[in-house]
Image (tube, rainbow, N blue to C red; front, side, top):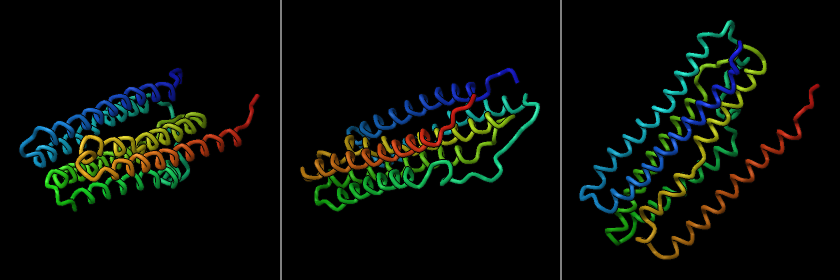
Length: 228
């Protein structure tokens, strides 16, 4: 095949990833505006969350369409010897970081919901709905990274396919959006110490993710072989 298969697939994914990030940025803005201005904010936010989940399918559709087009012109198809699961593609440490970020966000929402202040309870409800919407979107992206068909015609393209899946999964499960959501909702409506506690939580969560990234990177370097 004359086309550089991995390069074409990577280019499309970079563009789709950018589109996905723009969707998430728009979601944060929509959550903040809903909390600030909507009189029936929870209903509006439910619609916004549904729109977020639906919009997450568009970049994935673009990627799948490109993969199908490339697969159609392959003279032969090769595949992985065994079905890939989330442990092989994403890894337990990354999944744990994302899970902790979600639990922390839900805990902060729960704290706000238990407040005697009605504005704090409202902000907590907004944060809880938004966080669940983000979690669904993340899982949708992860599922696509795990289940989309293999597009490879030789061993090097097969290795690139696994690397692309891992990149897709890592990007999907990076909890940046969960770290940012409280700033547009509950922070400022709850007790002052909660803001400091949340900042500490973000720093620790980000540090854990950095350690995981460095560990994976160093592992790849130590396992690399020089070919001639």
